[in-house]
Length: 248
Length: 245
Image (cartoon, rainbow over all chains, first blue to last red; front, side, top):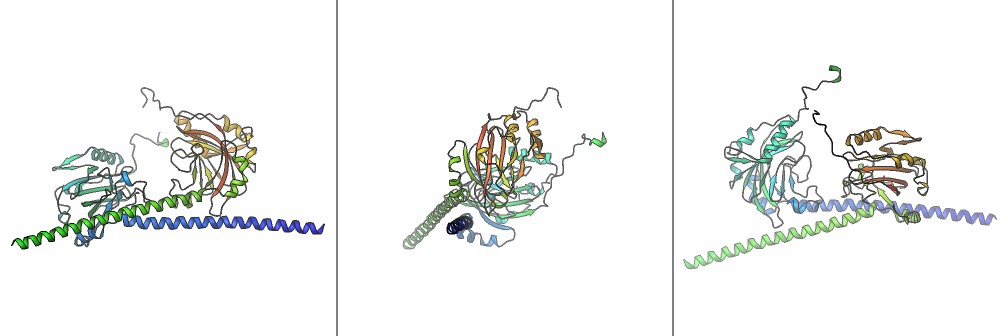
């Protein structure tokens, strides 16, 4: 009898030991899997950074320009091809001149999709883009023709006014012989001026020149921030005819 | 003169050839890099599927239950931990019992976040959750007292009424001795729950589920069964009475 109870105890101990080994094995497997996921992500992100970077030749051909402050060179991937194919949110089709990042998010200023540049992507955010033609980027300033209107534009703080500007940019309008829109055809060798207004984030005036197009449809461009405006804020909506319960 | 012109032409030809070779090499490098990225993303997605899958031990334990129709076993990852780690929309924290997917955005029924289960995520969608305690999933049927309210509730077709249910569920209410809420804390012990999830234009389900495992990374494995499928709810177009301001 004591013999059989000894064996029963032994059996229970070995069962518990077996189970705990199984659980430990599972935990180990999951933590290994998590590490694998983290390392794969890091490796993909590093490779995507290389894919998105302009080539050494691109950078060297604009080396002198890029020595100036507030300048840079970037690449936009066509959204219709790359969205969902890269780990990067937005598929490398967006760029933020203030964050200097292709990641789509609250600070994106420009998008490339269906061979068009566009600006203004969320909420009341809006912007205008105009083509200055095949001109050198180095000579463009706030006073240049086509840029003057963008430099002098006052950002509205009322949401209804911002929405009105959104609609105006959507249909396009002309000022001093230049057409301003929220989206424009992307053409190699053309220089563009862009005003991008992102409420609570940034308000920038940028000039950029498309230097070339790769076989994958991506566009490489050199850019310069001409002016940074104060971060715009939307004023809370006011309803003049609305009275609070206590005022009735 | 003609000799120097010929030399110039040869130099120009070699220069153009060199440029086009460089361009070709660059684009083939980019294509190779893209292939490499795509391969790694496939590998990442496969690893994520393994990470989301319940263990073989859990599956085996519920093999008989899982042989019944409209049942399943899944893992939910805590949203606050994994949202930015996995590529699946919603970070593996959501599940749709109607479409059998973790992918958020197309009508999810259940979420795990901050140690809480919740229901009702977009538009006028809403739902109710109630905890039944330590009851075996096999014993949870439409006859369970906790299922009475959920199985007889009529999903409203007017948006205002749906929003009202959403608010009521957020505050919580009692019916037949059970508390119904849109959000319930995840208890440590192996509790069973009932869920009614109303997703307009997609599905309306009454589901029973039980937490079977809780892993160290905060994920939980649940077994579930659909107790009742209601007709797909639709919201009626808003009607504004003539002359209304």
